[in-house]
Length: 267
Image (cartoon, rainbow, N blue to C red; front, side, top):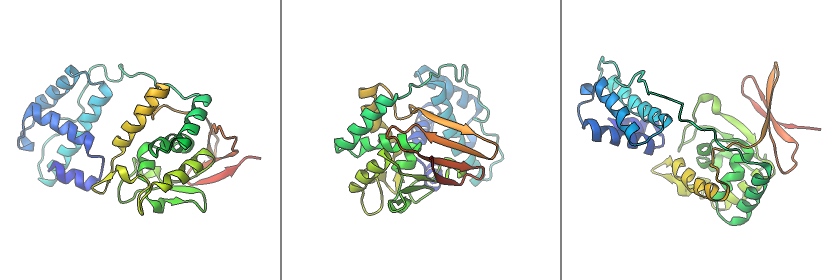
């Protein structure tokens, strides 16, 4: 039932499979209707003992909860999900604020990435200068990239979905992002931008994140999720998001209330 759910959802397989393996090891591989609230609470306690942060525990809970909801619906079982509204002691209190790249770090990192010959390092300027999620870039198909118009289309495709429906958008490739995309395309196959992270018709963004993270941690002591400096201005009729571009570009984005995006040129 879990494999059926994961196949239908077309999501990254590792997180739910890790959660499921941990739960089954603890509570046993049983009929889904036999799992109880005590099993769910025991699962939380076990994850805490293993040193998992509360955010990780919540993600594990959500994975198991989604699988059980699917199973109950498919089996027409009228049962309350034992993972529903599960309390985690001290949730969020163990979180820490991520560091932020300085402009000098971005400049050094971008230049090194462009000259490194490493496709994975090109993710740094691609992520930093577009503001995209890692899976949105790693999961790009060639049909999503328009180098004539110098834009990328962030939309669901055959190898990955988007986090939310409103995540669909078109973004310009400017400066370092354009250069990085041109280099990344040299390593693409006839369908995918990052073919090494595509397996079984699914985007393995976690693998790409781990590879990129090792370099960023070693050279900058930061992660792929560390934000870059940016300006965010909101007005009554539109929201303007302008990354602090280190290449001197004046191009930015105008995002309207209906989430349509167009290139904006500052004069």
